[in-house]
Each structure stands twice: as C-alpha cells, then as structure tokens.
Image 1 (cartoon, helix red, strand yellow):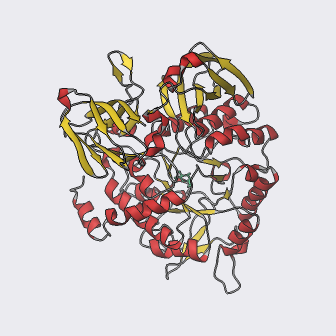
Image 2: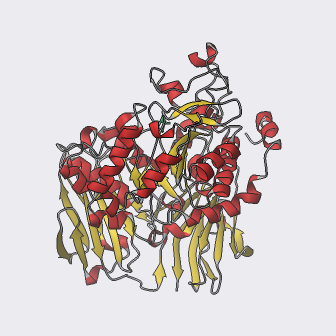
Length: 588
Ligand code: GAL
C-alpha cells in the first residue's frame, strides 16, 4: 500500500507527518484530560436541526443540572452549511441559524458561540476531511444540504484546511471540531450524485467494505494536516476524528485527535449499542488522558434505552463509563424523562467515567453471553468492575478477586453503584445475578496481592502503541485486529500459558512497538517473550535487551531511573503473526 502511486503522488505535496506529530501529541495531551462530556443534536434530529433547538438543549443542560455534572459542550452537527463562496469562505444557513446573519450580508457563528459561552458552556462544530459531507450522500432529501454550483457545494476542509481552521477557531472562537470522513468514502464513480454531476468525483480513499483497500497513510496525512492547523489557531480545542475506525484510524488517530470514532453510527437498538461498545472495549492500550476511543454518542433516552427500559439505559451508561468513553448525549433534553436525567447525572457513575488517572477499563472475560471489564482508578486499591449481561435471559457473572490483583485472603469491599449498596466479599470471587440486558457496575476496594508490583491491567493509560506493526490483509480479520491488547492476542483470542489465562500478558502484532511510561518509578521489569524471531527492548531510546524469542528465556531487566521502555516485537512478515510479552510485571 505504501508503494501505491496514488500515495506517492499525494505524499509529495505534504509536510512530513513525523516531523510535527510530536508537537501535536503535546497539544493533544493538554485538552480532554478526562473523557469529553457534552451534547450533540445528531442522534435526536439528524439534519433537521436549527439554532433554537440547540439553544434549547444548551439551556436544558443548565436547567437539568447536567452541565454542573460535567456535560459542558453543546455542539452542532451536520446541516449548518449554506455553501462555500468563491473566495473560499464558508457561509452559514442563516435561515436555521438566524443569529449568523450579519448586517453586511456575511454570516458568522460568533454571536451563537458568544451566547453559549455566556451560559458557561462550550461549543463545537462539524466538518469533513474530504470535499463533501455525509448528508450530501446519506440524507439527500434533507432540506438542509449545501447549495450552489458543484464547487460551492464543496463545504469540506479538503484544500481549505488553514482557512477553515482560522474561521472556526480564530473568527468564530469555537472549542471543538468533529471531522467526519464521508468526503473520502462516498464520492466514488458509483454514487448517483457524482454520476449526475452534482458532486465532484473523488476516488475513494476509504473502502468501508474492505479495510485493506483504504489508503490509510493518505487519510492519516489529511487528518494530521488539519490537526496542525486547528492547534495553530487553538491549542486547547478538542478535535474529534470521525473516520469510524476505517483506514486503521483507531491505530493512529490518538496522535492528532482527542477522541476518535471506532465504529459506524450507533442506533437505538441493543445490538447496535453492543457492536459499538465492542469496537472500543478491546482498545485500552490506545486511550489515556488527552486521547480517547469513541464508540459514538450515547443513545441513553432514545430507542430501547428510554424511560421504559431503564435496565438497558443503565447498562449503556455503565459500559461507556467503564471504558472511559466520551459521554456525548444524543437525546433531546427538552423532552427527556427525569429517570433518564438521573441516569445521565449519576455522580458515582460519572466519578468512574471521569476518574483522573484516565485508564480505560480492561476486558477480563468475554463471550457471546457476557463481558467482564475492570477499570483501575486513581485511588490505590480501587477498581470499577462492570459485569455485563449481553443476553435476553438472566445470567450469573463473576470475577475472581485474584484476577483483579487483590489479595483474596484479605477479602474486598464491594459497592453496587446503581443499587447504592455495599458488602464485604470474603470468598475470593465476586458474583452477581443479572437480569436480561443488565450491567452491574461495582466499585471494588482491596489489598494489592503484590503491593510492589504493577501489571499492565493496573495502568493501561501509561502504554502507547507507537507502531501497530504488520496488519492483516484479510478484510474480516483486519476489522477486529487490535495491534496491542492486555490478556488477549490482536485477533481477540485469550492468551493462555500452560492452560491458564495469563491476565498479565501483552498480546501484540508482529513488528509492533509498544512504549511504556516508566517515569523513573520502577526498579525491575520481568517478562517472558513468546513468539518467533528477534525482539528488542529499548530504555530511554537505547537498546537494553535483544534476543531470539525461540529460546523462551524469562527476561529480567534493571530499569531504575529510566523514563520510557519500548517493546519491539519481531517483524516476521507473516501476515497476522503475533507475539506475546507474557507474565509482564514491573516492580517498584
Ligand atoms: C456520520 C457520523 C455521524 C453524524 C453524521 C452526519 O458520518 O458518524 O455521527 O455526524 O455523519 O451526517
């Protein structure tokens, strides 16, 4: 793929991505220290949106207390454009955003943004990384599509990255931008709107049906370029990459964005919610303060998560909280039931979601029936545990205290967050009887089984998947492939050593590089590398250990004083080959 002529031609016209990605990383880390919280009109209104509806929902954030609980962004999604003028400036559809009409005939979002800011809230806008947007393809009957000739209907950022970033952040003073990718996916020759000349053709850079066909390096370079312009005009703005996990975006988006979508659009059904959850849940090693996996906006209050389905509504909310997903509300807050507000505003659940350590929960067990996830919290000896019943039947789920790295002999204190009840568990295993579709969300406090040792699942946010290595070409495998996981291989198979699950293993793809932030806190690393070929470990960028994994020799390395460790798995060039850093432990 790197060799394709399309890529070579394109890359010649771009700045070298690697040179500026470091600065961008710094900027990314300053914003969104915890998962962003806010409201977006898309799930409730699609393109039938207007200023009055958004202002009414912003007001509702204030009136319901949800703003106080942390939901601070009242955003705009698709539907706001009128056209791009010949001088490149974007005009707003003032018929639905009346405050945008300026006395001199121009348009500006500034009055709207100022009003939202005066309420104590923040606001964000929606755009596309290609030339055209999503509604122009997917909502062709919408009354709110861009107008004018073919060029004037090209409202996306392609070719206008600097101009649009200046307009959004310098002129309009926005706080957030969601950057969609339909412009790269949906304007190929097969689209009727291209065939009839309404839209200009763009050879698709994203192939939604075959991930290996997407031009991932070009898509990455486009987002990198826009991120650079956004940071230039507003270092603290939030940038959402909405490429739905396509073009391997889940593997690189954290370098440029504060949040990135990991899946197609959510819908208000149980199956759609689970599918979106599953797209983000295995990706704990990619998330951390400043950068978050985003399985899409909440449907709590909509569809099967409404006031008649509080079990499902709580389950959906618990799942997003335990995996540190952004909490972007998608319900019309002017009509929402009080029971739904209580769920969205539950302070104990939000404390888990917004825990300052910023670890994404780690999957401990996964089957068609249930999922068990544990999220380490900032307070030592505390974890949030979600027991998730995926089925339509009652189910018993549980977790061994030792798998949470707590001492079973000492017992654990367990608090059921939704039921607001506590108990002491002595027997070494926490269990719960779950109703159909129920998630039980627990706060578990215990004594560390080995107080001086840290395992990967205790600190996923300190890892960075610096290189994803060789990705499989097979479309099905490519879709589910997570280049680095805790306790699982990239394909999703649990890691077992001598018939026992290895919860401390890191399963990675061949040629991957995993960086760990030691920050001088640890004395010793121990692990058993398992796989084929020569691997290498670097401390502060210098080689500290390299060997052939076939020897299956345990490794112990003195890491005292080091700031970073890099784990480079052998690049065997065999498609879908994997490597395991088994029994991984860092000792203080
Ligand atoms: C989709 C995106 C949705 C919404 C929509 C607008 O691509 O995933 O969240 O923004 O476009 O047309």
